[in-house]
Length: 554
Image (tube, rainbow, N blue to C red; front, side, top):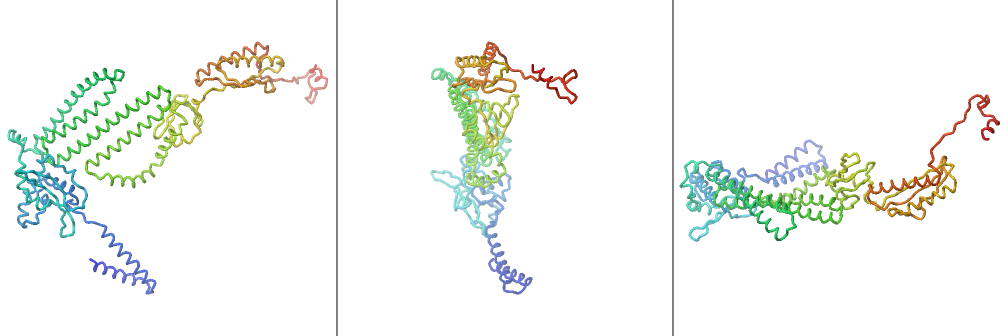
C-alpha cells in the first residue's frame, strides 16, 4: 500500500517536472504540490471507512438486520450474522440457514428481548443479547466483534452462542394455545407473527379502550363525591382535564402488559414497543400541558382579582413557552427511548441551529422583540395606546407579533421587532386627564365683565370634587385679532375616558352659563368691507378722499 503510494508520488513528480522548466524553484514547487496531493490522498483514504453491506457495524444494527433478513425468509443471508468459523465450509452452507431460523424462533418467543436496548456504539468486544434459564443454569446469547480478512470489524452472534442455539430452540416451544386453534390461525403469519396473535392484539386494544372509558367514568364519579366533601368550592370541570391523558396512560400500560402474554415476534415487538413508548410520552405531555393550563388559569384569576394587567399580557406568552418546552422534552425522550443518541442529535442541532438562525433571522428578531415588550412592559393587553400614527387597544402580545384593535374595529398586526422600537403612548396609564381649552370672548367685552367671568369659572372648577386646579386655573392670556382670550387649565381626577367626557360636558355647559351671566358672548370671526362704488365713495384713482374718510370715521 505504501509502496504503491510512493510510486504514485514519484510518477506525479516526474510528470510535473516534464511540463515545467528545469529550474530548482520549479522542481521544489513540483515536489511540494505532489507531496501535498499524496498526503491529502492518504488522509482521505484513512478517514473513509468501508461500509459493511450487511449493516453489522453495531450490536443493534446487526441484530435488527438479522431479524429483517429472517422476516423476508432470506436465511441464506441471515446465517451470515452468526459466527460459524468453527464449522467446516460444507456444514456452514448446509446448517447455517437452519441455525438462523432456530435463532429467530428463540428471539421471537422471548418477550423480554428488546432490540432497542442493544448498543448503537460500534466500539467494544462483547454485547449481551438475551438470557435463558435451564435447570438452574443460565444460558446467555451474546454478540462478539470479529475482524474479517478484509480488515473490516463486524458484530456477529458469538460462536459460543451459536453452539447453544439447538438447546435453546427446545426451550422456546410454541404456545399451548396454538394446539387448540385452527391451522390457518397458526400457520398464516405477518411479520413473523401468527394471525391469532394479531387478532389478540386488536381485541386487546379494543377492550382496553372500552375498559378505560368505563373506568374513567367511575373514577370521575368518585372524585366528584370526594370533592364535594373536601373542596366544595372547586369547579368540577377541573377533573375533566385529567380524564383524557390518564385514560391514555392506563390503556398504554395495560396494552404493554398484554403484549407479554400474547408474545408477538421480535421484529413486531420492536415496532409495537416504539409505538407504545410514543403514546406513553404523548400522554405525559398531554397531562403536563393540562396541569400548566390549570396552574396558569388559577394564577390568572388571582391576578385579575387584584386588577393585575400582568395576567392578560405575560401569562399567555408563558403558557406558550412552557408548552413548547414540554414538546421539545417529549421529542427528546421519545428519541432516547428508541435508542437514538440524543447528545449527537443536539450537537447536530447546534450546528444546524446556526443555519436556521440565519435563515429565520426576522423570526428570532420578532421573538426577542416580544420578550422585550413583555419585560419592559410599555403596554399590556387591554391598554389603549398610540403606536405610530394609529391608536387602538392591545388585544394580544404573541411570540412573533402584537395584535391591536383600532377605533375602526380593524385588527392591526405589528411584528414585535417593529413594535418594540416604536414610540408608544399609553393612554391607559394616565392617572388623571387634562381639561384644557381657550375661551374667545367678543372684542367689545368690558374689563369688569372679564374679571367677573374669571372669578365665575375659577369657582366652578375649584368647587368640583373631580377637578384638580392649580393656583391660577383660569387666566387672561391675550387680545386677539377678533377676540379676548381666556385659557382654562385643570385636571379631571379620573382614568376612565367615559367619565372624563361626562365631566367635561358638565364643565363646558356651566362655563357657557357663566359667560351668559357676565353679559357677554363668545367671539365670532367677522370681516369689514369698504364700499368703493360711485356716489362719493372714491376718486378717479380709486382712493377715497379725505372728506369721505372723515365722514365715515364720524
